[in-house]
Length: 89
Image (tube, one colour):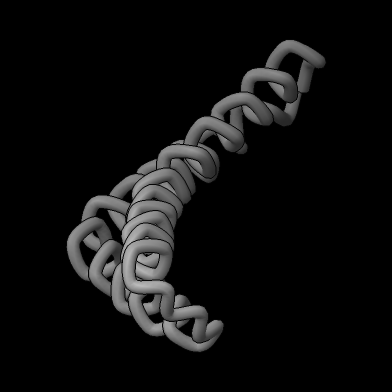
């Protein structure tokens, strides 16, 4: 196990993490922004109003991107487990 392999593995793990978290965060950010605009226009300042749309957007993102996310993490894990015998010399 070399340093280059460990650095590459860490880089791949971070890229997978960002790819998996990105769609969920984007949906939640968009929902929060839209609710904030509606609150500013209507001057409704209820703090609990922001949570429900964010939760709905997050669940929607998980439903839409869940299968792709699961395939990505399974592929990464499979590749990691397959490469383990090559690490032992």
